Image 1 (cartoon, one colour):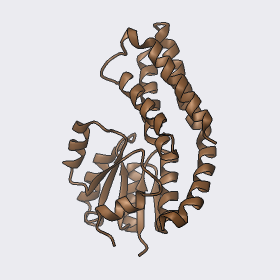
Image 2 (image 1 turned 30 degrees about the vertical axis):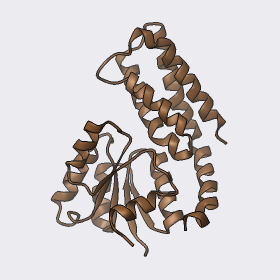
Image 3 (image 1 turned 90 degrees about the horizontal axis):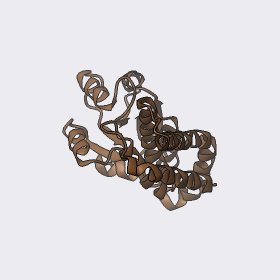
Length: 110
Length: 124
């Protein structure tokens, strides 16, 4: 059953990806913005919470669209923007680099 | 055998991918709800064979929704599977202790989601 339905499912998933791509990009943008704010020592608690939520949502959905590496990276950011603590200063470059890689991964799926 | 599944998730993308998966791969009938409160009403109205319930939702979250489902005699016996992106073992234990049939994880594989549900619920 699964093999017979695979092409139809893949096509329908591509359609859904196109539909939700603006939301994916918005979530990545929230992560890029948070990384920039953190580098400039201007990350507010609200921005951190937004970044945490964006990372959590991306972690849950990217793998469903076949972007397994995207889920791994989003999980990393979810932990870094955890509600319980501020990211460490040494993480500033990493936050930006991971967000940039996520941008590339999201853009790569057609 | 055709089944009727209720998906309760506030995330539109997850809801639609899960519905697509269950409809396309398994041919099941899917009803969706975007909040815990809406899910409680749909569960009463549609009497699904199982409920796929997101954990993190604004307002009434998954565990609270599950407890309300169990309190209502009209929905108390419907199997519930939690769906979560939380992977820490402490969270997993907490969810399992609620008494749900299973905890499934995001991201799920759309090709095998129906099989996962069938296996957990011993549906042939």
